[in-house]
Every structure is written in C-alpha cells, then in structure tokens.
Figure 1 (cartoon, rainbow, N blue to C red):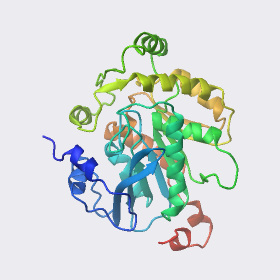
Figure 2 (cartoon, rainbow, N blue to C red; figure 1 turned 90 degrees about the vertical axis):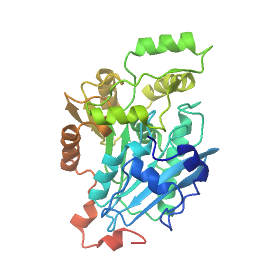
Figure 3 (tube, rainbow, N blue to C red; figure 1 turned 120 degrees about the horizontal axis):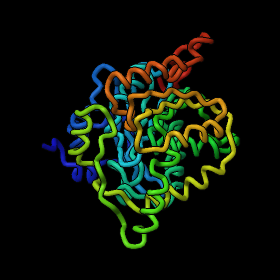
Length: 334
C-alpha cells in the first residue's frame, strides 16, 4: 500500500530553501516511505526544486551536526534519490553534507519520464548543481559518487571540464559504482533501437533482479516513482553519447571504481579497460558476487565496498589531519 501520493507531493514541492528545514505537507511521508529519516545523523534536511535547463530539478540536502566535507550523489537510469538511503547514511556517518537530486524525467523532477534528448542535458544539470554548492555554503572537500548512468555523468564531466578558475573544484575523492559506458548486449541494443525507434517511443521495462537483496527487488516493483517503460529516445541519446565519450582524451584523476562481476546491465568487461585508458590512475574493486544495483546490494556486499572506499580515503577531510584548522574554519556557515 502506497503511504504517500507522489502526484500530490510533486505538485506541492516548493523551491529549495536551504535556510529552513523542510516541513511541507507530504515531506514526512516521503521520507518515511523511502527510509530517509536519519535520526541523530542530521541537524536539518531540505527538499525542494531548482530551475535548470527548462526543468524543475528536485534536490535533497542532508546536513549533519558537524560537517567535515560534502558528498554529491548522482543516481542511475530509472532510479531516483529516494532509493539511495544506504549511501546517504554512509555520507552522514562520515560527517558529510549529502546532496542528492533527481535527474530530468526521474523521481520528483520534471521532464518526460525516463527519457532524455541528449546526454548533454545531464551535464548541464550536474554542473548547475555543482555551481550551487558554494551558494549553499557547503564545506569542502567535495566528494562525488555515481551509480551507473550517474557514473557516466561524472566521468564525462571529469574528462571535459576546463581548468579555468570558474570551473567547480573536485578536491575530494570520486567513487563510481558500476558506471555506464557500454550497456550489456551492445549489438542487440543497437539492433533493437534501429528496428523500434521509428515507430515506438518506449518499450515495456523488465524488472529484472539487479540486486541479491530480495527485499529491495520487491520494493522496486511497487515503488510509485518507477517508470514501467524504457524510452527509445533515451537509448538513442545513450548510443550517441557513447561515440562521443570514446573519443575524449584521458584525464589525471584517480576515481575509485566498484564493479560487480554478476552485472548483466553494463558491459563491464569492455568498460573497465576503456575507463583505465581514460583514467590511468583508476583504482578498481571487483566483487564476484555483486550485481548491477550496488547502491542496494545485500548488506554484506555493501559493507565490502564501503570498507574499501574508506581505506582509499573516500569521505575524509585531509585538512583536518594535516593542519590545525577546526571544522568551523573549513566549513563556511558552520
């Protein structure tokens, strides 16, 4: 039974106000339904809309009592931020401000459902969010975490951002969970698109079990914010994006990549060597038992890769270890 009405919630979403904790009608029910209540870990939570590229983008900010940095989470295709409670909790437990948002056409954001005309729109939304972090006085370092298509968005940004002074600075670590480059069954995807795109706008989605967690798989099937269709326009945009991505030059970042070897959604055997070329300092953790939905895998699998991220320094604030600065020095507005 649905505990909240998503249509009413979306209709009543206010503009994002980071100065006042959210308490509008439907907010508590939304947080309860998706287990986004983090008692003792947050001093305030803020959900609202910002206008980007002609769309209304839903943004959710979680502030811990004593922030030591910030984490921006980018979800995958057909997901939304409400499904990422485990990763939000991970960030809060490490004293990070956590910023989540719904991509256009997903979750609480506006846009054609599960569709996009061009992946460049994802870039414009992502970079707009990065530009807002300073306005919201969120402290550094800034860490990035992307699942699947979220990882693709982050990777494109890293490979294409300029080194001009106005470019957002990524001074924290970067984590990629099963990042999209080429999807699995690539030849079949291209053939199906060529055959269907001229006369079908969408095809029925198959809710395949992408996690070993049966509770999550059952929840996904009844999640009212899930699309039951896959947009052919999105597939076409992804095909065009892949050609552009393959041609991008390498960059001197050191992302931390986690990949399940039972992943049947992305072609990880093709993707990993390509990403190693793009990021020569890439560090990779392969998990034999994991499927694609790493953000919602079993507790044991999540703990395995989260421990590894900790060991690599993800979520840490080096300045607190190497200087005499206090948290208030590092965090404007703390």
